Length: 376
Image (cartoon, rainbow, N blue to C red; front, side, top):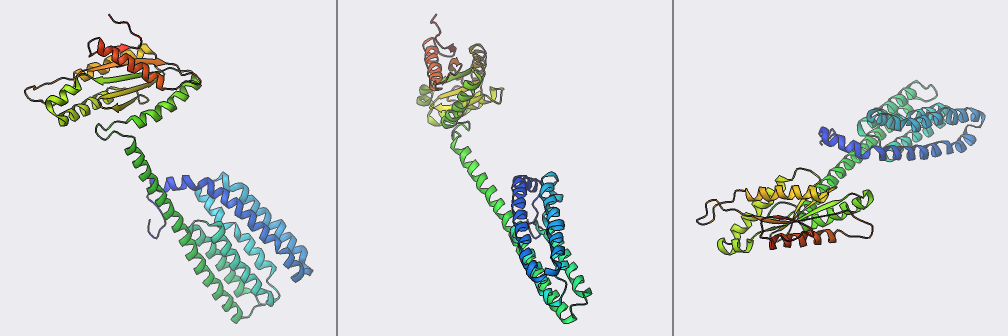
């Protein structure tokens, strides 16, 4: 970020998109507060400038206030650069009004200078325009005040020099405060991004199966609950496939758990890569079982997909195991489909798919079996 207070373009765009609406709301709150404070000084005007109180009313209520309200209305209708310009330059008419009202007699000059400093502090600490825009606005105000002091015959040179020194010192301090405020805002944004990224990474880890690299049962349960509620709302069917590796225990016993883990990874990758729809979910259910979930799928369509998965696994290349140079693994798949109803739960869908999967096992393995299938 550095001294320029600017992120690389993609981060800067995300930063501006996140804070845009809040900055508009914040500006509107602070401009209303500023108007209340600014116009409350009519009480001071009444006692200090009573002969010219009508001028005070016109200047404060007829000039500065409408301009501020115009900014209030316009700030949500412009782009980012114009928005920040409005943030920074809205106080300038009020500052000009103060100089105009308290330019004479000389004893009131201190009042105008103190008012300018208070307005600068309010703009930086309350309104919080971006640093570069604050620089432009405050330098404009200070330069205008310096010209006012130099050209005002009612103020002697010593007073003018003292007031100018005071104003430019205030400029330096307020700009340091503006830089610090924006720097902190940007640092906090980066910190939030880092925390969100870490949380997202942890969430991803918690929902992924460490062995196979595909989603785990926790992810499946969460997604299925969401999908189920959407199915109730839309009255669309959901299909489930319960997939079990055939004779996997024999593989582990014959070749060891390390080889069995390799087989699980190959099968998981094959199943996951064979799915074509991004909305479909493939997850490891536990042990050598996998589950696939398909939104808006009837039983017939799910059976076609199940057969495609079965063939893909049968054709998958496994690493050599002992004397078997080209070993093969098969799967049994149970298929079920339901249209969710109010008061129902997705567990019943998984139970039906599980029952169908055991039916496929009974019928000789390496096959697809729909729910409630008849034994041949």
